[in-house]
Length: 403
Image 1 (tube, rainbow, N blue to C red):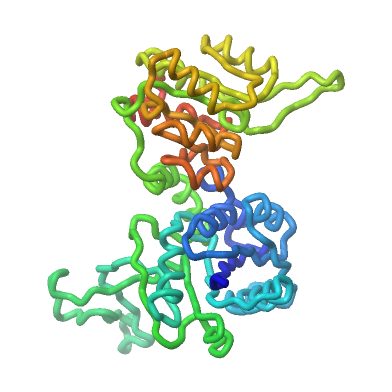
Image 2 (cartoon, helix red, strand yellow):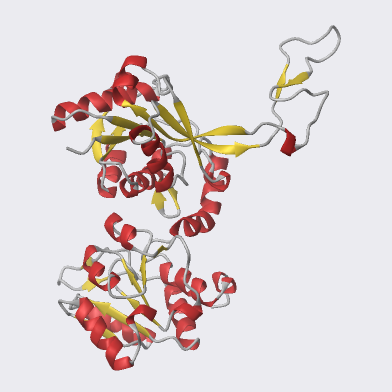
């Protein structure tokens, strides 16, 4: 039987610095869901559980694909430790699942830019490399100072160097390498963690991560920074992005990609959806650049056809096999499938992902779809994701008002 590697994400409801912090969206995705997605996509992780006392956080966790463990009030207050939440989650998981945990991870959703490689790295350090515990760190080169407890009479307390002698300032290359604990991910051998009651014991390994992604959200200013950085860092996480020379056509799913996947139904049964004007501008820019654009949808819905007419686009809808229709369209247009960029959000898009050279998922896509994508937008479906893709293909100036 493969080892059970349980990732526990503590996410209590109470937060004084940022109210409802763990539900705060960054890049259009709640912090707790961002952590869940990183854990689900990480190698070695077998199970993901969110420990919470808050029904709204529990709902967001389940929607993102995690299990939920209800945290008792006595370990959900301001003074409760993360270790207490993880120990309780382990006990509950083992009782519910009937199998022991071999390696347990502590993953903090207050680190919005945690990457699946970070999670996999700490898990591998314990599971495969022989460490008892592991944590994510970033290289650190700063000089740390600390104020003295007491000063001389009539003068302030002054300060001393912590990791350096203030009378001697060696060059960076002459100093030993220091590492900053990121606070994002930790892994522990389960039996050792139970015995120690603390996340650090035995041999502790360091898993290095990108310093640019190190940010902990504990106050409104840090949340604002995270939201400002998300378009850059989320795109970087997705990997290499396509350029105009890589793509000969763009094919778009409709529901959940050009909309937010919600449908409004009136008393007569008529359906309406909301679309994003920025997406229309992005599509117009792609067409001006000479790129064929197709809407492909399984829905038999007049809304899809009406939107296609508005954008002056061809549309194939009401079809069972999107991949078959896409392949036929490529043959008719004499376009190689490996030169097609296809944008989708749900599991019925996966056959098309396997056909084209550039499968792209919107940020709000199902986790399985995000994992299968070659690139992922930082913007959710229905909120300008198509405009973002147009900027990938046609240049950074299109991120502004030039569309």
